[in-house]
Image 1 (tube, rainbow, N blue to C red):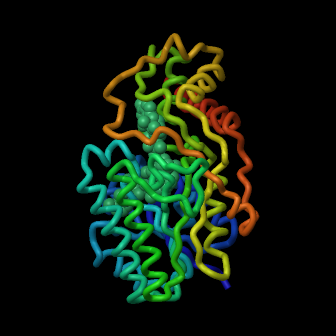
Image 2 (cartoon, rainbow, N blue to C red):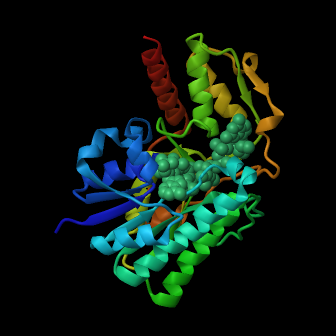
Image 3 (cartoon, rainbow, N blue to C red):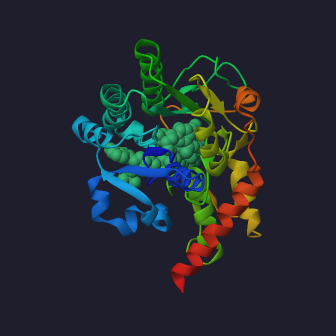
Length: 327
Ligand code: NAP
Ligand code: GDD
């Protein structure tokens, strides 16, 4: 029988790759989108333009329990991937209140509505390595204590605990993936990898002269979103619900990212990168590196992209996009 999945945040990086992946597996795919998105499909649906005729979209907002309840009560979903969130850490310092509202209450609305009308539906929560903050344990795994350093991290930790509590208290099949940073050509332009690769392309093609950036010494465990959505699906197919860390196990600095991205177009990053205090955060997570050995053992999940393959793909994609925009 065809399985039916609901993806909140289907217009985002992960939602779009997950929709591709689930369609490939023969799923009937539905997505929650904001009403404003339906009014500006060309820009808002750019990541799912190629599958718009194969997915069913429903207007709903993370700020409205009623809108979420309405969609969940209309269809018998087998799986729900809750990816929608205010996902930009820097923005969470600027407006902690709306980040908390969307990421905590929004998650609670989806869980509460599922419990009410669709308790058999499996639920995936998009947890984050940002929940570890400046962790005392290196690398970080499922048992590492959480010490979030941003309103975003705090909101994700609350979502993680809500999910666990619905599992413990009401017996729902709900779990969290604790995913480390993952990137792709579909990454939002505000995140450091895409900001770098798009600016590298603009510099190479004569449209920009510098890359203004913050903390070059921050280190992240960067994987490819394609690999990570595969993990999301696999996590939700286990007999018993459980939480998993998903990571590559390698860490690289923002400086290494710049060096690699500029080298892709035969430029020296030191000539173009300018430190700009505006991009520093009030509290930084200095280093993240994940230990995904539980996922490797239980899910048989492995990342397939290396860091340099990821950056190579992103630079090539941005060069093509920038070239297309000027011709
Ligand atoms: P993203 O590209 O920023 O996508 C976020 C999605 O959430 C978009 O579809 C956005 O819709 C939607 N959304 C935001 N506010 C909403 C609201 N009020 N109502 C309905 N939809 C709303 O994020 P991503 O990189 O794909 O990440 C997916 C999830 O994984 C997020 O929860 C993120 O926090 C988490 N996560 C990401 C990473 C990573 O490295 N990428 C790592 C760990 C966890 P619009 O298109 O309308 O804005
Ligand atoms: N965005 C950005 N812009 N980050 C910069 C810049 C800059 O100009 N300069 C340095 N950085 C540093 C940040 O301070 C941070 O240490 C690192 O680059 C990565 O920043 P982002 O790409 O914005 O990602 P993030 O690690 O804060 O958050 C992402 O990963 C989380 C998982 O750990 C997001 O995708 C979150 O949604 C996700 O949960």
